[in-house]
Image (cartoon, rainbow, N blue to C red; front, side, top):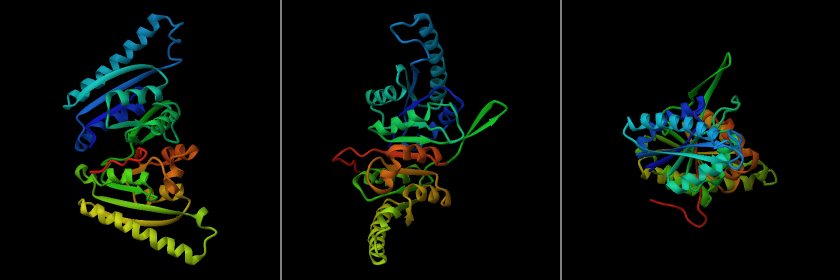
Amino acid sequence: MFEKVLFPTDFSAYANTVFTCLPDLKSAGLRTVVLVSVIKYGDVPMPDTMNREDFKRVAWSVQEQLNIARMALEGQGFRVFTHIRYGSPAEQILRVAEEERVSLTVIGAQGKTLGQELLLGSVAYEVVRGASVPVLIEKALVIRDMGHVQCHLACEAMFKRVMHPTDFSECADAAFQIVKRLRSVGAQEVIVLHVQDERAMQHRTPEQIAAFDQHDTEKLEKLCQTLKMYGLQARALLRHGHPVRETLRVAEEEDVSLIVLGSRGRSAIREILTGSTLENILRLSHRPVLVVRHASGHVTRN
């Protein structure tokens, strides 16, 4: 499913923690890892004015760290390529993803207690918005103690218990096509969630709301039946409320290990993936989030 994965790193404690989860993707087909580190504007002077020796020193240090990471992955049987880029982190990450034709980008997103570690949150969000391939946002618990930062993966057995929020759009369907294939990577249960937006329902009559609920419940059950045909346990959940708040609430109540979302759409999907709400869901969720972008007019199917 994800044979070639891109992993951007700045070698921080957070990035190094997320790095340790890469071998877990072997069950998802991972064979090749592309490592990229971006020397940001400001790390060294701009190219037309910089001291070339300063740039060489920084680049050498980055390459040494990439080599250590490469050897660690090669020791576990992976094929590894490394890249050093200079410029805007998000722009360079997206460029490498296109050049290398990766099938997945794995990136860490800062938690609400995290300050400057890893690629700053805005980079992760820009990558999600601009990526043409699925992006896995890994989450880690950050603990500060006497000036030291320790990071621990917040979720193990990532594919075990999956939640798929849907608004029944083509964009949500793009994510559903990935969800269908997760049994092979250890998925045991999928929770298919739809949130009736309280803001859209406030002017509806009780009869109209009941009709909407029945109609959407039937659509959820059809999705669950499809998942069962693929050998997955599946359960439908219909909730009322604010889509983002309810999505986060259900993720905690159900103790899910992964949230799989389409990158565009209406209702919950639109709420999650536009404006500041995107930052909030990725920052506040304690669970990894797999974002699947829908190519306009085209949905990849088995």
